[in-house]
Each structure stands twice: as structure tokens, then as C-alpha cells.
Length: 150
Image 1 (cartoon, one colour):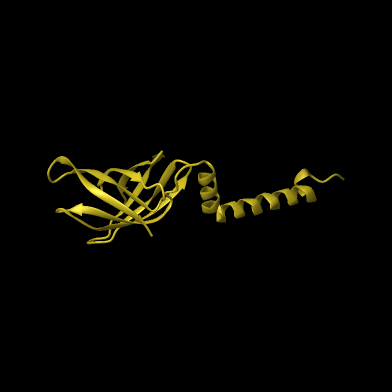
Image 2 (cartoon, rainbow, N blue to C red; image 1 turned 60 degrees about the vertical axis):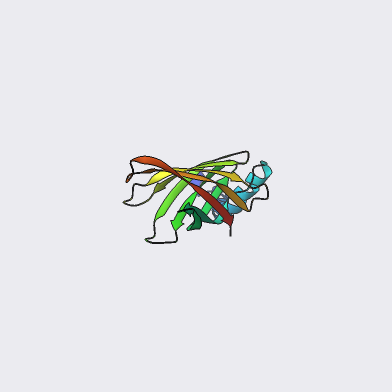
């Protein structure tokens, strides 16, 4: 009597190989994304960052950021370091030396805005502006914004 196709050793070996490959790709996804991004010629902005923002004319520590990158697409998470801890989801694109990000507060918050940064060619710093809508003043506000790689 002939066995069904899913009972054959070749089928079982193919399934085991597919599962093994999927596990390897899952654990190496950051390495693979870094490799593809570097080979594509885009500046590397993925990684851990610390930010400073202008408040009352002075730059103050603002957030810790973790960014992920695949070619020109960027996404990640920002966490404030002063006052009540707030977490923001960020996503955007890198075009040349310009990084444009949209941020949105997670959880029950509703704060959102845009971040426009110029990436240093060495990839260790970025500078630009954060633009948000101020519900207190009922007007948009922009602040100088600096990022440094950790």
C-alpha cells in the first residue's frame, strides 16, 4: 500500500528544513536588515539614540530612542527620560540625508507630531526639528532637536 505524500521522509525533511530556516531568519532579522540596508547604499540610522530638545532656549535631555531600519524605511520607539515616562511609536523614511518621522503616543495618550532630521554622513548624530500641535496654545510649535548615537 502506498503512503500519502505527507508520510514520506522527503516531505518531513523539507518541513524540518523550512522550520529551521524560519527560526534562523527570525533570530538574525536585525543582522539581515542591517546587511541589506548597507548594501543598498542608504545611511545607517537604525540603532540606539539619545535626544536633546530645546526648552526655554536650552537643550535638555529628552528621550531614549531605538530605531530599526530596512533600506529607507525606519520605525521604532521613543521613551521620555524626564517626568512621567511616555512612550511614542515612530515611523518614517530616509531620503538621502533627510530622515522624516511621524510619532504617536502609545496607550491612552494622543500626542503626535513630525520629526525632520538631517543625518550626519558619519551616522553618529542627527539634527533638525520636532513639530507638534500644542493643544494648550491651539497652535503648532517647533523645537530644535538633536540626536546622538549611543
